[in-house]
Image (cartoon, rainbow, N blue to C red):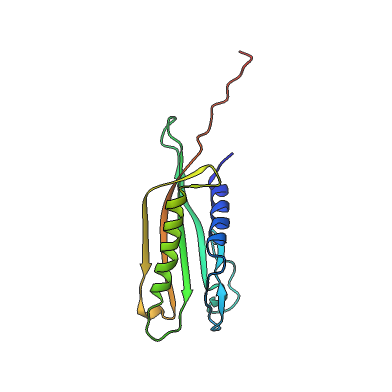
Length: 157
C-alpha cells in the first residue's frame, strides 16, 4: 500500500539521513542539527517561535489520480527556515545550500522507499526579505507518482 502519508514519512526519514552531521546556527548562537518535521512546525514554545530553527518541513500539498490508466500523483514541498545573525545578511546562502542538497539527492536517487518516484518539474524558491533578518526561508516543490491502485479481480466468477 502506498499513500501520500507514507511518502511524507519516507521523505522525512530521507531528509534526516541526508542532513545527518549538518549543523547551522540556532537563535541562541549554537551550532545545532536541522529539525525535520512532517507537515507543520510543532506548537510554538516561545513568543518568537525561534526554538524550531533551523528546520525543514516536509508538507503534503495535494494529489490525485488523473485517470484509470495513470498512477496516483502527489505534490510535496520542503520548507526550510534558518537563523543567521551574521550582519552581512547572507543567510540565503544557507537556504540555497539546503535546497540544492535536497534537489541533488532526490534527482540522483529518483525512487524513495522503493515505490515513490519523483517527477519533473522540480521548482525551488527563496524568500529574501531584509526585514526578516536574521531569519531566512526557502522551499522546493516536488512532484511524485505513487504506485497505482490495482483493481481487485474475483477469481470465483
